[in-house]
Image 1 (spheres, helix red, strand yellow):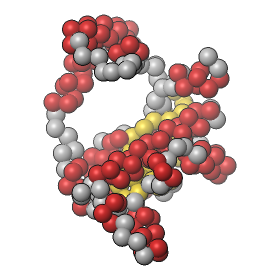
Image 2 (cartoon, rainbow, N blue to C red):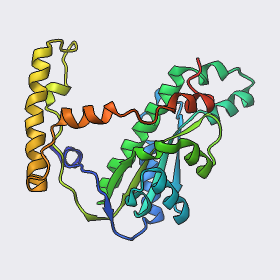
Image 3 (cartoon, rainbow, N blue to C red):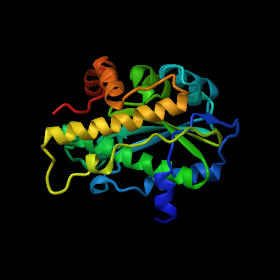
Image 4 (cartoon, one colour):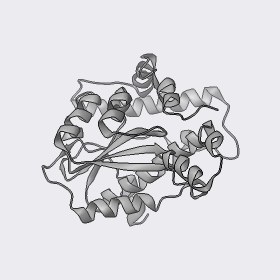
Length: 249
């Protein structure tokens, strides 16, 4: 264990922030840390939009299901998969890059690049004593988000990252056991063992909720997540992505 691993293993989402903006130096440090993340073949297929306009933040909060911490934070970042610049570079270099940037592979590259950059940004922010919360809820209405942020074709807002000074810290939720997540040499295929591990984790999560809520809630993890997955949400996504001229081949 060291300072970095302690920081990583003590992560928790923060949903209550002080009314205090980040400094320009903090913002630039976070973005530069994001840019230092690994990127597939140096493609750098992502962009970051910082949202400071209060009306736009309020609208993003509305898109995200009226989550107040989308509007009330030190700074709100939107991470985007971005192959727009690659379209432009193809024109600059007189190269036919369209089949590649419209492929599922490059779409995956852009999503992975954005996620890697975002996690660097999150860790950098936490190292500065700030709190963070990822916001997938902006995908509830990507047409609205795209219009609000004026993202062109081949740019897809993926998620937000609210960062600020914590005014309240939430409890850390127990993660799945290491032996359930980590497979060595090949994927474990014994379903009985798999189910046993999930039942053990269900007990841990149920006890966590019971203690956190004073007995008002005793959810299991499999019950909670299966219930969520049973509800079909954001099923427009494939059409939206292809409308933005990505994931076409």
